[in-house]
Image (tube, rainbow, N blue to C red; front, side):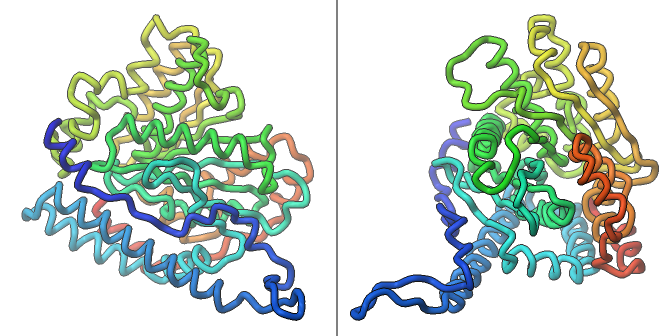
Length: 411
């Protein structure tokens, strides 16, 4: 761990456009007030806004490049990873028509508030995706992205955020420190702080503090489920340091997550996330049980936290080779045996990326998307009526490219 500490000190924080007051962007008629010799006058803000957007694109491109280089540095360049990297490049090129459209909306839409600061640590940023109409308080989904605990990044949730915003749902995508900038405890702490920020501030952006939901995908599902159990444990122990209440989370959605690390160490090792790296991320072999929600929930000493947990919905594809669907099956069983409310939904033949990328890029009807939307709108008759008549989601990528991408996907 001494080596890990040295690596942490060598990594400097990446500063991006923090938007400390994102609502300041909403100046009527896109004009800013400035003082002049003859009093106050207005001037167009288009040029400064464009420069800021371009600067943000450059900063985030730099960050993504650093994440990729860091991943390669820790995984090494062997035959297996050269093959995987080539497959990833082809996969990304096939889906590039969709990625470019989503990236344009992410960087230039006035309804996307990027890099809002929620804490004082590096990467303590979140993105907000706002519906066109926020005249009435909207339900809120807090989303924690995946990325193998090494390349997680808030912009990975942009497609989900944009599509849910079209249905009148506010989405907050939380960024967090990745390894080696942080280990699992740091990731959980960052996520908890991000959730706290959203709960305590979302009303300022048109969100309903009484309708907040939490969702994690892949490694983000693991991190967010650890955060839930950690928060429940704090509340059951009557700790004074609690800055948000688990009762404020109406439901939890886990998408393609891994919840028992003891069962996944060898699986990840065989797929290239080597044991030594994974154990460093998880703070040593002795911590694997501590950060395994499927194991932790079975501890009799934690029976008092069960009533505090929100309903848990787990989604997984049966053809997922990155994290096998049995991971969600075992977690659902453990939750039910402990007395928690849990539901497991398996999607036959779906891979690790089908549910999160290919299907949303395909557009049209999507059972998982519809399930999440109907849950968030479950107590809103008007919203449910609008959902019933909403136009199908538009297609971003031709079907032939999606099928080819699925065949060569390294995930």
